[in-house]
Image (cartoon, rainbow, N blue to C red):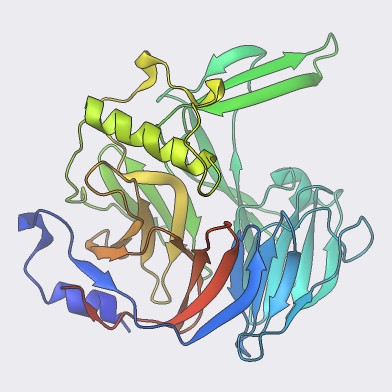
Length: 381
């Protein structure tokens, strides 16, 4: 069943003739959690309506009830069975079962609702294959990771020719399949190794306004890959069938001096405290003249979400004329359905069966969770 977002937008004239994608907006929220978080990296809805929330900076992993406002920590930090070094992203794998990577301890925890029931140790073949960096999991028994080439010694810059492989690992058999190659994000890296070849020092700096090709896996096993040139979404079904998306009708924004100044202002605003004068940018955030791209990338690196109906949401790259937070909605044929615009202090935290969870930041940068009914209610005027 298609979402109201799809149905409403598909009844309108084609987007190719429009200056901007058709906008939609949310219904009013039906619940708000009054507990403030420092950072929210994932929200996983359980069948009883409670949610698992990860806050690796402060509260770690909690289960929250939006009906009562009750928030309880799940397990605790540590290295024992069922414990974790730092809460990673939580993924649905079957029913109310979930998987969470414990990057600090290089292992994986399995949960039944809000209880840690299995600890997959670091010597497990799945952990060895993924090096503990599981990016996604599906309900078909697979986990997904990225296999990247080894970074050489010295300072190097990732180019448009560099890519990594998306791999799928079956949790039962250990079978490894390479699903696609994706362009890496341009990054300046410095790696120092000793005489034994061991890394003794490393650092990295992303090149401003350069993006790779992000990807996301739906719990049903569908893979969505966002391609940059041209900007489109390619889909792979669990049985290996690919659907190549058409180029999305998004205006190309040239990197003018006005766009550069707007980008620098956004960076400065994000690094200064609330109500404080704007300080000069730190040296590491200043951009060499030759690093600016010729055109603005259409999306922000890695900021992808799935709607309950399986459409992918891609967070739009802000520009001088469109500085707000918004997401492009693309269906599984690769067609642009429209754009979901939010307020400047809002981002999407996740989805439930019939809900969207919005993360709202206050003046002190505390994060609060609101639940809105999904699908959207009407077109924005």
